[in-house]
Amino acid sequence: MTTTTRWTRRHLDLITEDPATTAPPILGPVEAALPGVDLWDMWPIQEEDGATALFDGRELWMGLAAPAAGHPEDRHDVARIRLLALENGKWIDLGDQFPDGASPGSREWSGTAIRRADGTISVFYTASGFRGEERPTFVQRVFEAREGVHREIVRSGGEFFLPADDLEGGPGKIRAFRDPAWFRGHLLIAASVPWGERHMGAIALTGPESEGRPMYPPLLVADGVNREIERPHVVVHDGLFYLFFCTHGQSFEPADAAPTGLYGFVSDTLTGPYEPLNGSGLVIGNPAAQPDQAYAWMVLDDLRVVSFLDYRGPVDRANFGGTPAPVLRLRLDGSRTRLEP
Image 1: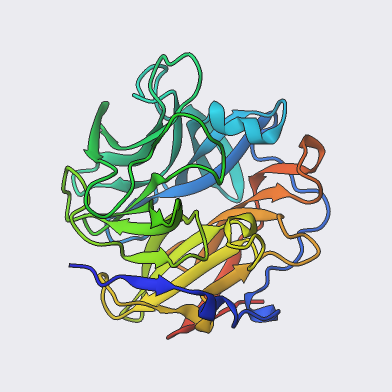
Image 2: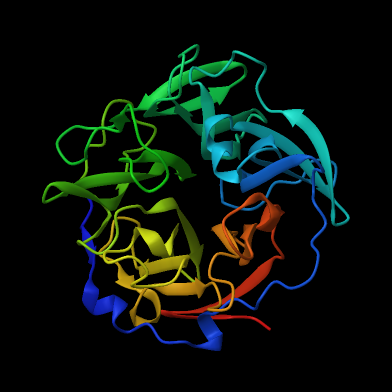
């Protein structure tokens, strides 16, 4: 059973501008990993113990991809999971992860991938909408794809969470049940819970390899301070459980009450209770000069932090990166963190 941790205004009030928790500005040109393709929300194939898997000496990664055309925000309506190899610092395109028509959704959203003990790969991902729908809806379903079989493994709604069944909406406006991250047989999922007449962000934790709806109360709720938590995941370091997630400044209540960034909590156990890292929860915030420069951070077991290059200026095609951002590295010391130089 989980112990629900509440992320509150009191925590956000402790945020200060600090080099230990502020990403350096990303300056100058950044070479596109896949020219002509927008690439975002990346994750490596991992071993069951959390280590990044190696295949003939190279890492294999997945990410969301779409043609680099039109307004960048439209990419979510056509997103597919792309497979890439990382070898000697270079990205090699291996094409779409799933054949056309294999996914039960109209597009594919974020997740994680695990190499099982028998060598097969489980891809946990979000199927958004329904295959063949005339226009995109925002229903979100969590699937596992393994050896060509796509199986819905957990459903939104139930006693503790809102159903993610919006037909209309857009980024930051819809209820969530997405971004499954596998951890020791459990899944962490970005979810939504009621807050007045609206919703607020939460993190769901499923039982080991369970089907149906989450049986436990939320692991964390953004207690009236944030409506959209994304990409939750856990890293174990020095015997402690570090719960990380990301969110946009515009998702706070009020908007921009805290920076777009990577946030985190720490606990002695997976099921909590958790305390906010650095007192506030902020682990890495975008710099004030480029408040939207990166997003979708993921902390790996070796404490590399990956993200993608978002907007370095107005929200338009000219300023959109759509490619991996420079890798950062964290130092973790109990409930304190800092960026390595």
